[in-house]
Structure formats: structure tokens, C-alpha cells
Image 1 (cartoon, rainbow over the protein chains, first blue to last red):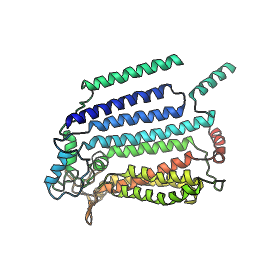
Image 2 (cartoon, chains in turn brown, yellow):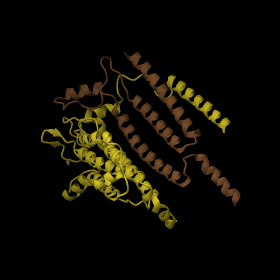
Image 3 (cartoon, rainbow over the protein chains, first blue to last red):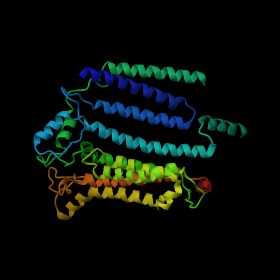
Image 4 (cartoon, rainbow over the protein chains, first blue to last red):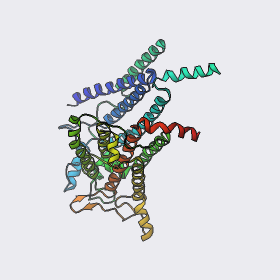
Length: 139
Length: 271
């Protein structure tokens, strides 16, 4: 059981790291600002997925449960049992905070991209650089 | 330009391989998940709903909600403040956008409009239930707000923004709602402290239920379901902040040419 989980987790984490590499490639070398923003979102999400996978656990028998009590416990032993089967809730809470803050940043970035489009009528980052050069030469 | 792309691609490939091998060797974190959760997580799981230990419990069945609004409540209030400041930044960026009603609009075809009339109220109902039961079932204030914001987004794409104006969802009103709800979160976070000042007892800022050295508590039980004290109020108010904030951003981002015309004049006047 644990070996299967370990193999799946290894493949998943390797996929997330590859995702990070692809996303960084998009941020660095795509000319379009929309593509850059999309790559940044992909990068954040890959890191969040890795962070969640740290909180995973395995059990000797059965599958781990989400960190939510299914019903109101009547005795302290029910809470003890829940503690023995649930996954780590702290990382999920931290990732939720990270998602909200990433969301706020992405929202503002999209606003900036819209302003860029209104000004230059394109989202190509090379256009503004050429325009700057042209302005310098004409002065 | 071609050469630069190749260098970036090769160096990123090297980075991926290096991080993967460091991970496989156990340098970053251990890939085989443990049989036992960490001690901190175990204490959260143990005391989230534990009426036999009144000094540490929060009466919330959803442990993630308990961490977000009680054990690490200050984090979340600052997170909401970050979202608020992002929306203020967008307002400053798009100053001079005026809302004009009665422009020509058609929307999508009838085939899309009829089902979405049924779906949109359901989406809002799901959002409200996620917020109200955020401490009992999977969900919470932010998730609920994000789900409910799908409804205005659908209205804008399917019926046009004029339909949103007809529902009296104007950007100024939404901004006011957002500010009021955020202030509500702050007021609830200091309400027990203010009460303790009046009644001459001890209480902490952001206190939920009884803690060491303070016997005051928010109402944690409603008839036959746990209310989890302030977590319920926080979730409901967070729903309103997120819903109003994101709908405001959608309205600002889906402005039309006639509404933007004055923007450049305004920007030049300010500069």
C-alpha cells in the first residue's frame, strides 16, 4: 500500500516540478503579457500543489480522511479516532491563504495588462521597447 | 532572440532535473508520506471540536475553518486586507470610468439564456450554503464568495452588463458593501475585547471561545447545531466582502468603449 502511494506521489511531484519549469519558461520568454500572466498563475498553482502534498499521510489500513468531522462527536474517543485518520489541515489552511493572495496579485496584474493594451493596442512586450527606442532616436 | 530562448530553456531543464534529484535524495522533504501527522497538526485536529476541553476548543467541525479564523485568525484578516488593497489599486488604475446605461446590447442566443436563468439562482444558493455551513462542512467564506461570483460573471457574458445594472448592482454600491463587510470583520474581532472593557473582565482581541484567563465567549451553540462562535460571523461577512469585491472587479473589467472615453481626460487632469 505505502509503496504504491510513494510511487504515485513521486510521479505527481515530478510533474509539478516540470510544470514549474514550463511556467518559468513562459514568464521569461513569451512576448505576450497574457501568456506571461497565465504562466505565472500556473507557477503559483504548481507550488501550491506541492505544498498540499507535504501534508499527506498514509494509514496501515484504509484511506486517510479529509480534516472535517463527519458528524458531531458524542465521546472523546471519537475525536481521538478522527485524529488518527485525518490528513494535516495546517498546510491546507496555509495554501488557502496563498491562493487568496495570489488571486489578488493576478487581479491587479490583469488590470495592468488591460491598461497596457489600451495604450499600445497590443499585449506584445516588444512593442513598448521599440517605441521607447524610437522616441529616444527622435529626440 | 533565438539564442536567448535556447539558453533559458536549457537552464530551466537543468533546474527541473536538479530540483527533482534533490527531492529524490530527500533534501527538500521526504517523499514517502508519514504514518503520523505532525504534532502541531495533531493538536489542531484534537482540539478543533472538543467540548471536553473548553479552554482550547472552537466548536467547529471543519478543522481548516477553525485554523483560518481562530488559531491563525490574524493571518486571514491581513489576507483580506491584501485583497482589499488590490481592489483599491484597480480603482485607482481605472479612475474616470463612468457607467452608462442604455447602450445597445444583445447578449447570447435564447438557447443559452433560458438555462442560465435557472442555473444562476442555484449558483448563488450554493454559495450562500457554503458560507453559512462553512464551519460544519467543506467550504468557508472565501470559497463561497468565489462560487457566488460566478453568477455575475455569467450574467455579464450571457445577458450583457446592462442586466447587471438592471439588478441594481452598481460598482459604487458594491464597493460600499465590501467596505462595510470588511469593517464588520474588524468589529467582530475586537467585540469581545470591547465588551470586557465595559464589564471589567479579561478578554483578548480575536478571541472566539473561552481561553486561559478569560471566561467570555461568543455564542457557540445555536439550538441543536454548533455555531463555532465568531467563525460563523467571519465566514458570512467574508462571503460578502469577496462577492462584492470580485463583482466590482468584473464590472470594472468589462467596461465598454463609451464608458472608457472619459478615462484619458481624467488621467491627464490628474497628471
